[in-house]
Image 1: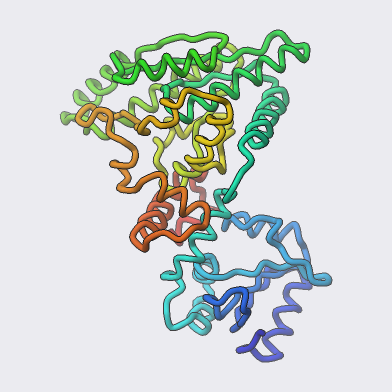
Image 2: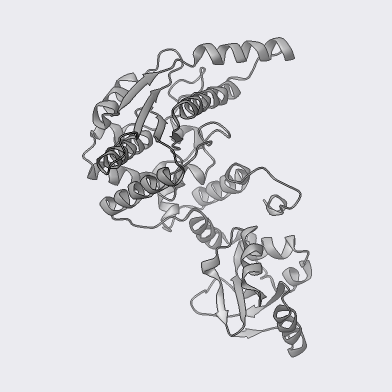
Length: 382
């Protein structure tokens, strides 16, 4: 049920939309399917392509468009409704129709928005999901006219899963008639790594075409010393950790450029939501086959592949800080992966967990975007 606007306002909105403008109107709205919402913002345009392009700046997907006669439109609720109205300078509509309790506090709608943005499914078929993603990387590497993949292998869950996928993909491509495809796995320790045994177990499971080790410590230490000489201060240990991640990615791109390979990235939904990766470090890559999976779903796939249990039960750690070697992801984040995965699967979590995750997501939006330009508006609302 819609109410709160008069006939003239509605007709003006339709007229503008039919003329090819992006027309926005808000009204009170009650629907038993959405008990927490009492208003909706409709964004319409007769030019569907123009509407799709407009929606992209807010992360709205074309499949969310409703078709009604000659008018295509988005229905916006909750946090995204607030973002759009304030960004489009339609504060009057926001204040006129917002509920007494700020929608910014409506974390349920924010949870749904994040799940949609990261394209997470509540459940998966592990075997089919693995086959689909392997087929995707096989198709893309041929489209890119590359000759395989390179990946930094840590011995953790994510790189082990991707390494297995990449190795099987190039083997299948070779069987299909192109002998030039290969997978190169890189060990990229900073001196001696405390988890080298785990990495060797992963290598034995994956059986990569080629395994090479490049010690990043000399390069990182020189960069640290150069910084200290130039700025007359020490590089903080946390920032040195990011330098390690970026040096590892630089080596991978050196190998990729030399052999005509694609760099595979380990990013998945449980890392993306928190921004728990280094910008232009492990966040830099050519292809992200695990996109949309959460941590426990990656574990389900490794179980299906009969990987050693020590790999997927290992405590996840970025292991970047000298002062805190082996610091677990969960300790660094103040959240467990089970809590993160529950949120991503749409389950009820504590208000503390929900608030932390929403705050992480908003604060790290810049890490999931390309560099900001004068035409971007997303940064105004985070």
